[in-house]
Each structure stands twice: as structure tokens, then as C-alpha cells.
Image (cartoon, rainbow, N blue to C red; front, side, top):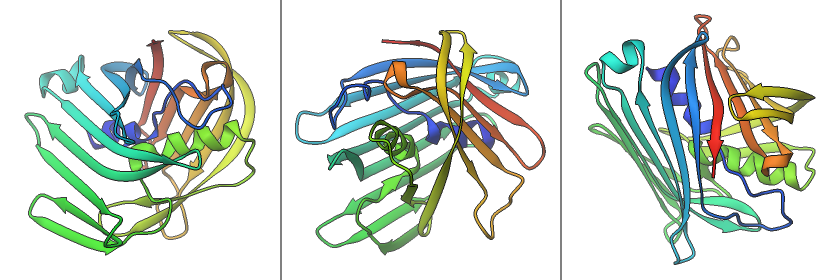
Length: 236
């Protein structure tokens, strides 16, 4: 189920169509497919915590096939603040439960001390914080903001397990995409393996400007050829 989980980092939010740096709370639902077969549902929520911070949370449950048999349940939570129209990480928590494997990861961002601490199982990693750092789940928030402002460069400092990874994206063509929620004109954004990474792994996301740059489809192709896809069902 690792491929099912990694793709969740790409999902983002509606509301960016307006000329503002923050967005309204929301709830959206996606169908999750493996090689075209429906295997789960992902619910995404965003809320304003009322203290200057926001929380983005995704919850995925397996509903068909092996994902259902294994009782896959994943909750990923990002707490962040808005700075100059972009998210900046404060805390991150990931929990995976299934009959096959349980997994947790927690990251704390101490801006006063200038450090990031990541705990995964019995391992702990520490490294220096950098301005504008975000967690994996918040990447598409940054992409949506940059698309809204007509950026030509899409590069982000992302906290991973033991280091800060630079993630770069490129614009693809404008395409009309049909998903369960309807048909939308979208901007394709593409990320491929960086130097030293496995270049067979490719991620693509289609953002609908009419929905405030909400991605209506997300695809990740793994090195073994499996394709994991999220398709928008509804948003409110």
C-alpha cells in the first residue's frame, strides 16, 4: 500500500481562484484506483485553527480488493501557517494501520531553534530548518498558490525523513479532464525523478482553475509499472 499512501502528499484544496493568500475551510472526496480498479476513498479537510495556524488532513480507507481485506486506514495531518501566500510547516503526523503493516512518522518544526526533528518508529532524525520549508502533504498547496500567481518556477524545500529535499515541477499542457465530479479544463503539473532518483517513477496532477486550482486528477506511476490514481468525486 506504499504507493497508495505516497500519492496523498499531492492532494490540495479549493479556494485559490480568489485573489487572496488564504483559503476557506473545505471537505473533498476522491476515489483511489490502482491500475484502473477502485480500491479506496480519500477524504480531505482543511480547517482554520483560529490561532494563526491551519490544519490539512487526509483520511484514506480501503474499500475494495486487498486494501479492504487488509483494513487499510491512513491519516495524514499537516499543521502549517501562511507566510506571503505560501504554507510553512509547523507539525506533521502520519499514521498507517493495516493487517499487513502499521507505520508512523512525526515531524516537528522548531522555528525558534532552527531545527526539524523527525521520528519514524524507533529512529530519530534532526537537521537544520530552511525558510519556507513544507511537508510532503503541503506541496500542492504551494503549487496551487504559485499557479494562481502565474509563477514560472515551481521549486520547494520539502522535509522528508532525514533531510530537506528539493522538489521541482514543470507545467504541462492545458487539458480537459473528466472525473466523477464532472469535466474540467485543467493545467497539468508534472514532477519526475531528480538526479540520483529512480527516473521510472513519475507523478502528474491536473489542476482546475474553475475550482480554485483543486487537482481533479492525480496519477503516480511506480517503477514496477503500477499506476495509482486519485479522481475527484465531490467537494464542499
